[in-house]
Figure 1: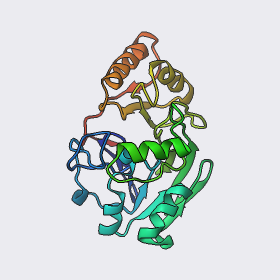
Figure 2: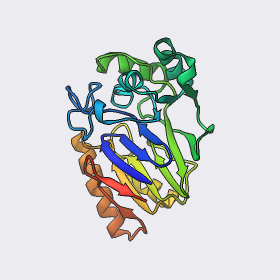
Figure 3: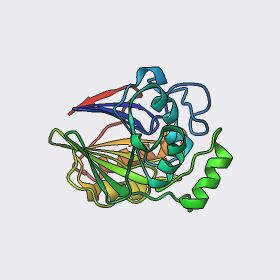
Length: 243
């Protein structure tokens, strides 16, 4: 299994299928506030997925989903609310609807959706308001989710934008959002890391904010100080992990 950290919360996973999670790809704009990430490793033209997985509809996660759907034959895996929005543009036949605690089997890869929760009430209507105020083009937040992906005997978790992680244990690698503001802070991160027992922890969704960088430094130090049995790996944008 090949996993490339493209930037922010974007992963490109290659197993028997190609999956991109939260395709916030290179282009113009400011990271965290537009639908293009100028710091991402890959551009829209360089990603050719079979499936697009969206943890939720905020602009720095929805990203260039529509552009990818127009350019490729990929199918969209997302919440009912986001799928209803996308259906107007691409039709129902390319949608795979999923909500927390539901599972999809795509070829020989299994995707389990798990509940995630923004801080400050950014689900539902509050999340839609954020989308309207902060991003260049509105999309509904929808249900905020994390994804547990199982393939080739490996288990990979992507936390989405959450400060609560439940239902995952004994992972090969966990990609955890640690911006210290809307997602995990250092105390929450350590609690999650102890609970999920992942062989490798990779922080994501933190470089857009100074507090996030500080959170990651503190978490790394706490893991060393408390001798927690995990490998804490900060991946550069574009870096590849082989499992």
